Each structure stands twice: as C-alpha cells, then as structure tokens.
Image (cartoon, rainbow over all chains, first blue to last red; front, side):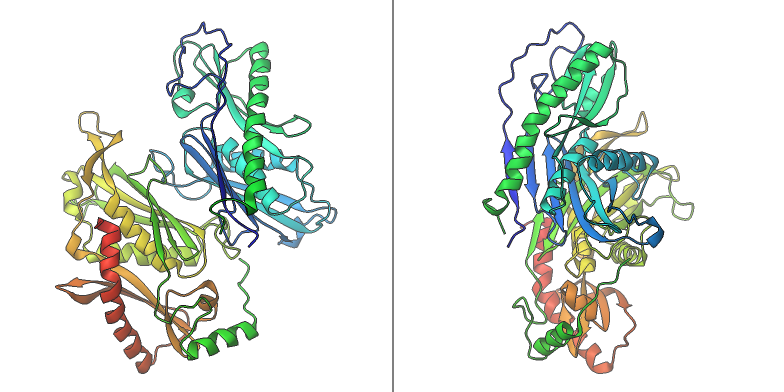
Length: 259
Length: 274
C-alpha cells in the first residue's frame, strides 16, 4: 500500500546560546535554548480516505492536514479556466484549548485560513489542473501556540503526499520576543509574557529553496533590526524543520509502522 | 455535498456475499471491527480520546464549564453534544454549518446519554439556581469508513468515563486551568451504548463499512443498557427511507440480545478500565 504512516522524532541540536540576555526573560520556562525548536513529530498518511494527509507536532501543539483533490470545482462560476484553485480551511477542535472553542468557522479561523492559503499558493503549481479545486483542511487537536505554523508544516507535507505539483516545499515557524529576548517556536506561556516590552509573536513561513517568506504576521513591539534578526532565526529553524518534513515524506514506504 | 456513488456491480457483489454470510473484509454479518482507544489527545480538555473502529476514526473531547442552570431545573447541570463531520473525514462532508447527518448523529448520541441517566446531573450543581457545571461532548470525525454513529457514541461514553473534573475556584467564580482526581458524577449502572444495524440486500448487518452503509436500505440504532445482567433498551432511532418488516425486526431484536451480551463487557472495560 502506498499510503503509509511514518513518524519521526527530531531531537533538537545542541544550540549555542549566543544571544545576549539583557531583558527580563532570561531563561525559557521549559528549559529550551532561545533558538531551539520544541521536539517535533511528523507523520504522513494519517487519514486513509484522503488524497494526502499529514500531522505535525511541536511540543504541546499538534496540527493535522488533509488534502482532497484536484476535483471539479462547484459552483462553476468559481472555476478558473487557466489553473486549479487552492482552498485552505483552518480550524481548532473544540477541546484543543482550556476554554472550549465553539465548533464552526470564526473570524479568527477564517483569517488564518486565508493567510495559510496565500502562503501555500506561493509554492503549489496548479496550472495543470484547470477548473479544479484542491482543498486543504487543517485541524488542530491540541494547542500550545503556533497552531497556524504547525498547520502549514502539516499542510505542505499533505500536499506533497497527495502528489500535488509543488515548486518548493514550505516550512513555517513562530518566532517571537519576550521583553528583549528573541525566541524561536514560542509557546503559550511565552506568547502571554507581559513584563517589560511584553511579547511579540511572528508567525513566519519560508520556502525551501528560495528562502522566501510566504507568510508573515506580527503583533507586539519590535525594532526593525530585531525583526531582521528574528527572521534569520526563523529561517535557520526552518532548515531543521524541513529535514523532519522531508524525512517523514521519504520514509513513507519504509516507516516502521507502515500499514 | 458530493454523493458517494456505488457502482451497481459492487453493490450486487456485496449483497451476494452477504447472502452467503460473508463480507469483503472477512467479517460475519454481525461482527464488529477491532476497537482501538488512545488517551491524551489534548491536555487542556477534561478528557480527549481517539477511537478507531477499523478505519473509522473519531476524536472526542469533554469540556466542563460553569453556567447558570435552566429555570425549570435549577439544581441540575447541563449537557451538550456537538458533532463536526468535517470534510477532512470524507469526500461527502462539507465545510460550514453542520449538515443533517452531523445534527442527527449528535442528537441521537446526546439523547442516548442524557435519557439513560448516565450523568448524575444533580451532582453537577454548584449553587442552586445560580451555578451549575455544563458538560460538553465534542465529536470530530477524522476518517469515515462507515458506522460513525456507533463509533462516535462509544467514544463519547469512553471520554465521559475517563474525564476529570476541573478545579473550581468558588471565591473568584472561575474554572481553574487544572484538574482534580475526581471524575464526572456518572451512574455506572445506567450506562447504555448504541448499536446500529443496517439492512444490506436481505441481510441485517452490524458495524457497516462505508460501502455497506451507502447501499443499506434502512438502519435501526438501538441503545442498550444493563438491567441486572439482561439487556434493556433505552433509546432507538430508525433511519433511511426503508421500512422494517416483522421478520427483520425479529432478527434485529434477537441480534441486539446476543450482541449486547458480547459487547457490553468490552464497552464497560473501555469506559471504566479493567
């Protein structure tokens, strides 16, 4: 059977802590280095009925992505005669966080769906599939910040798994800042950091070859030079995440728990 | 919603097989697929589990909140079941408002749990007329390979059985982000679980596959509990346009008895542990 499941645990490299720590956030709550990603698990082929599927987990955050299509797009007036349409839908499961999330779309989930759609659109090539749609469904069963970037990591794997033509792979990470300290793969506690300059959250998606930025959002307070540094940190982390994504895809047929 | 289309050839083959007492996956007509349960899907929920029956997979989470009670039952907690049959699970599901399949599924499961007396609602009262616990059961379909109703219903019971009450801070009137060791007040004796039987061709079939479900003429869901070692029916729902003749009714009710005796100990073990 072609669609197997493979899991891969990536142990973060021993990061050298070069950053000067002047601010109030001197040590990460979970003991990580400032440029260290939480332990990752990537799986491909998690939903048997889908054309492509994957899950991506960092620490307490997990996202699943399912790809269905290309299939004929209805209603017809939404079709594009030149190329296929990519449609992304993101949502958090009701039990993914402490306060229950009402099922169904919200303003937040609609917006995130759209920015993820734009990000993924920059790497997929649907010119061979006019009048069709490729649907990407991202769902989050558990959340400890960084759900949209985990969702993008899973979605990129699921698209590859579905055999959708892609110009490049896509990898995403949330970088951030707690007071004056730049951080990679921000968790919920860090996202809620209130002291000093507070928290800045920067979800970022990077293309695998061109290293172009396909998704960028920010809220908080940060100087342009800090932002430059933050983006560089994000790109570096993405190199590691990309390895995990590729490993999971490559081992699709050789994984230990292959069905 | 795009309809699941079954070629006539395949339908004829499935029906012919069943007439000989066989199924494509090697099961007998009344056999269930293997049930796999996994804990700890989300640490922020009172419980969140994954249940797989064959390739049909659901995630179910239990959440507890505090709310004001309904005026007609000021000392009783409230209960709500919701189901998302997300397009991730099947080509046939659509995004947006829940369709009739999701609504029916959630309502049948909700009723089965509520009316059986499984949850002790009066013990969910914090302050009469003011504050009661509100129990949410949220079902998310991950992969539909048939019989979502039974799989989701079973998962809901297991999730409730394994849920832990959150810590309530009475002074500030809020629910803490922490759980006690206490479970939800449940009445073990009142538990009943749902079994759905379909008529495929001329055969009554339990735990249908997606293909069997697509060609079934009718379905009958029956929730069955324990009455001193004997089965007691607590809820039913007939679905699909077909009508049940008396021979089929006889077959189904006989099956209910034998399947209940076989399945109930398994279900109890899944909900309460050994």
